[in-house]
Length: 83
Image 1 (cartoon, rainbow, N blue to C red):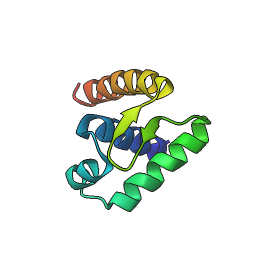
Image 2 (image 1 turned 45 degrees about the vertical axis):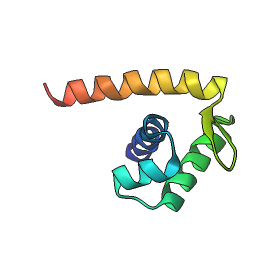
Image 3 (image 1 turned 90 degrees about the horizontal axis):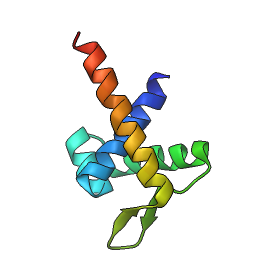
């Protein structure tokens, strides 16, 4: 469960940072670790969350939906921890 939560937090960080590299820098991880985490998440979910080109990274429709739910879930967890 902890690993799954970490993976979701990494996904949210990538979306909010706009790139794997920026998210890696913010999370103090390697770009490779970020990429592998996202690949495992996509494999587990059975969908592509991002449209990737050499210059751009954008969310797929499924990625957008997953981001919205993930963001709310992480906010709820953070709220519960601060109680």
